Image (cartoon, rainbow, N blue to C red; front, side, top):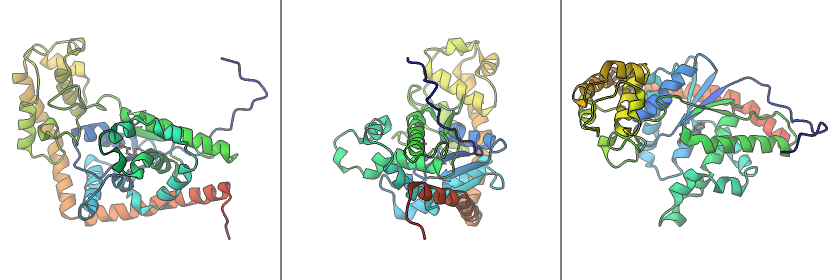
Length: 350
Ligand code: TRP
């Protein structure tokens, strides 16, 4: 590598305030993986940073959604944020479509992002392969560009996401850097940092410990939905795939035992312990003892979350107030950023 020439000035870096932004799609029901991998982590961040948590309904319509259900699904995600413990007095909770800056900045970023960059996105390649490839929406291709706009409309500096969003976050950074360079506005946008959610970020299917727990898995038994009853939860855990060996007393003994590792991992995150702590208690025992303990723990931890979600969804007034005031507060942050963006680009202004 050649040395950096002393005459080459490094571009100025963003020096504004730090802010967290993340989003969850209102499509299908939330499961344990979303809860432990995203919502619980969001709650932990709200005391460290100013946080904005979005229900990304513009992203949801990249694939067909039922207009009769979309608003209810949006309320459901907002209810899940609240039930998990996101405090609307601290963090902003809002619906993406209620703040116009997302769509506007998304368009502007369409003109900054390069085809080659977006064509490399593996999530798009996975979703667009197959026989119906010609019939997917342009929006699905453009999805990660809108994601960059979500983050940068607030000049957010930190983005808690799952590892599967790594490439999308890199694209956001590339777009921010190119905008700053192209419009000669050094440090205008921050280069947002992903925060990968540590243990608990990868909750695997209850039927196959090598696949992520997913709302698109056709088998409902493969996941614990946030709104499952205590009975469902217990049944699903008892029927989860495991093996016939005893649990090891050391975490190293979980290597090569994907299902055992997943169940121990779930126990650990639900109980706020390390996997080794769990094995100190259950090592040497079989699943006949471990699964009922895990089922009890899961019911004890998730039951109250589900109850709160149901209460909020039965009386949407509270959720609607949160979303409305969240949208207003979000707009107050994004609107001045968009004013600056328009000025930097050189759009006509009265
Ligand atoms: N693409 C994200 C996901 O599937 C959701 C999302 C949309 C998001 N916009 C975002 C996440 C902005 C973080 C920041 O999980």
